[in-house]
Image (cartoon, rainbow, N blue to C red):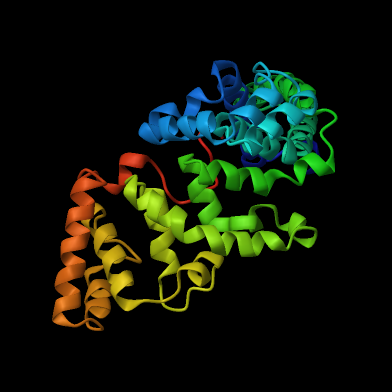
Length: 327
């Protein structure tokens, strides 16, 4: 076949590959839900999770008791939302984490559904015209993924049905709650994007920008104390010359501080774009000998005590702090 009668093999492969990727995306999400949403973070959190749970038990016990027990896993978010929100407001780390994760999934559901349908339709159209054996094999895998997509989307649709704009508008606030309670993925994401994680809601909640300014430094200090490479990566970028992010505005510009964090980052990372020996030399040139010695000692001590000498890749990929473990 030629011309309009055939579908280019490259296009078929691309469509099938995207269908497979989408299937993996929603399947991993649902698998994470069935295994228990809070459990997905426990290994990464370590003592941070325990501290957060302790805070939840002591911060507002009366409010927690009034909110009632956390809804079972799998409860549709529309029904679970009031209880989870009340518990999150009272300082329950697990509730705040569950809320920002589920709200983020529901916010992206319409887009995922559209993408799944689009590529499913494309694969079905391709199957009608495919004659090449390689095309047929590629399409078979893609169509199996498309069927899996439909099944997993049905479950996600049931989870998100009835979630309204008011609930979705609490996404950034609950991300902040989880970050302040010590959830490491929420903390890194909130530092990176702040209230901009849900930019549309800023029109109704401009006060969230001031709240970010008031909490960013404390979150940075907590992240460094916890040996969190994701936080350090965000901080390194914020201290770059000319950085114009929210985090850059919140932490300010200080030559000694910039060298300390660059040196700390360099101790756990091989030379790479953005953190080279030349960068360190340029930063060091702005310091007095005493400042430089103090910064070197601080970085070495912090790397050994807080980061336990772990290389930067010990925490996994850092390129997008708002890609959470279930995605």
